[in-house]
Image (tube, rainbow, N blue to C red; front, side):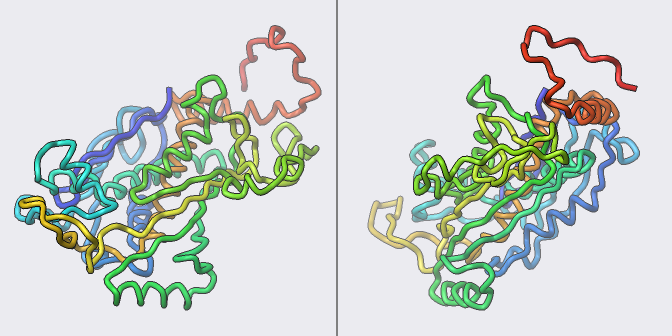
Length: 369
């Protein structure tokens, strides 16, 4: 059974709720580490006023005993410092690029706040918290996840002075900026995911997860954004003998981003994404007043100027969730001890030359001591 997770809550409601089901029993959970992950999400140049006062007060409602998972649904609560949903005014003019207009058309009601509150990127705080739980599970199997911003507004992230100046200029102009980031996972064993069902392919799950971050407009695995520019003889990663790798096999390059045919291949898992400039602009964009259909500028809501750095942190969380899920699929998940037992049994069976040549000759595994 895979991990399943869901969230609830509005941007300016009482708080957010995050639930994850399918965790193995016996997994120690460090709530302070989750709080640290939530704090990272607020960091970054170009973040808006809410980052100055939002506390992300975290508590656990169910699923733990003495700080250890019970194997039952784990529910986390994150309080909102700003919970004025009932007092905040409605928006008169929808923002191009946001859910506003499409939501009004869906509900056939001019209450834009009724849709924007849930569509807000505030929801990603809940998934970031769950991702930190997944990261703690993955750490027991030597999987480590990191992210790197590649560029902001087309400027290399290494040139901090240049892209920060771009953000300052955008802020002064009432504008916003986007950028590009990568999420990388090291230590992922081969064979996670599926080739038997399209929606269970690991690359499909990872790219869908990253695409679910608000404002993400493009996602690729490995060198996917350049795949159309390279002949197959140069793009595909040669298979080489490597006694230090799982099964004694590795690759001499990693254009595939660690996934082939829907399965992890033992290489570093690399997901890259492009995030558009956020659609809430102080100077507004051409729109209409929904009360009389007259031309106007879109209504402004408190917002960020640039969220690329924050999006990379959320990306880490979502990659962690998807990798933890497929790992649980592969190893079973009644208890953490059981998962480790299966995991170490797999790692012992590393000589490919001794493996059966015909699927019909596979035998049931012997008991692992």
